[in-house]
Length: 120
Image (cartoon, rainbow, N blue to C red; front, side, top):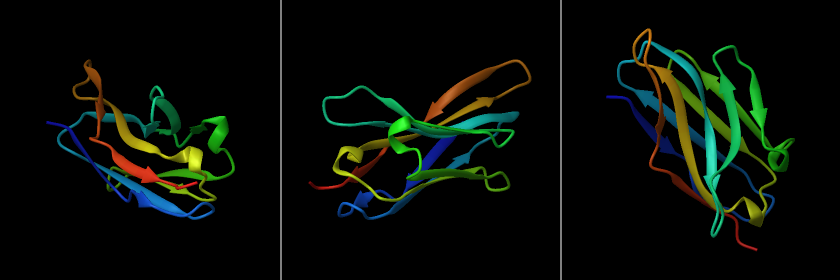
């Protein structure tokens, strides 16, 4: 059973920083990509940042230059360093992982979410 455990959310003043972590546990065949989505009040879930198994990264335009995603392959952990936080970054942040559980079977897994609040 694949599980994702998130940590690092909280409340921070505008301009502040937070670091989110997400660790994958369970048996997998290979990891395709990991990353973060977020869902703000009244909004749909949106992509924040991803990193694939080749180390390639992708970011939402709204976070480019402020957020950095990184991955520790040994620990199967992904990090999201968030700097210069703005009130509009307030959301529940969800970790996801796209994995092959067997050579032919793949699936997406989600963490339960961690709240990030930046008061205006």
